[in-house]
Length: 162
Image 1 (cartoon, rainbow, N blue to C red):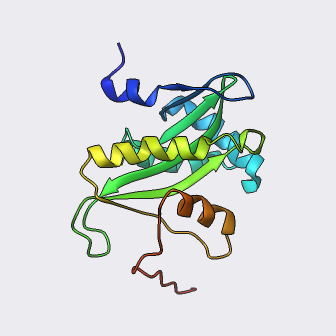
Image 2: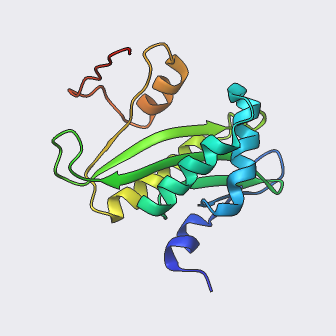
Image 3: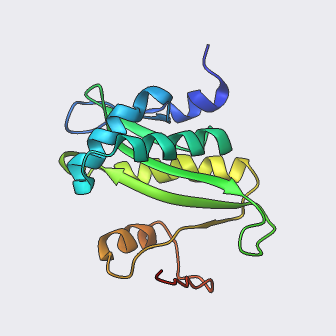
């Protein structure tokens, strides 16, 4: 029997590709699907990168990372977590690290559905703010987060090249 959280994340949505899209909590068995999607998006074949990231998020906040599944494969994913004490922010804060959606499935609100599920989880965990970082040259992803209601923050990234 599914837990209530898994049930909520397991809602079925209609898509034009296969008729069904399932948004659910990411599982260990999704590593290959996420790796394949990353490769398709131009990141190269990097299973060790995704194994590390998936393991990290599953240990820190196992119900936060989500995948979109259609046609029996991963067609989207979003990784994030709720944490406190980062950058002097003591309140629980949701953080979104990465989102990926298969180009063949874009335009079907998959990213929005992934975000809705992870944001619901963040609320349940007590977060009142969600943060992410977007490269200023990434207008598409900035537009996506703006459409969700994200706004520029007073936190500024600083970097030092070594």
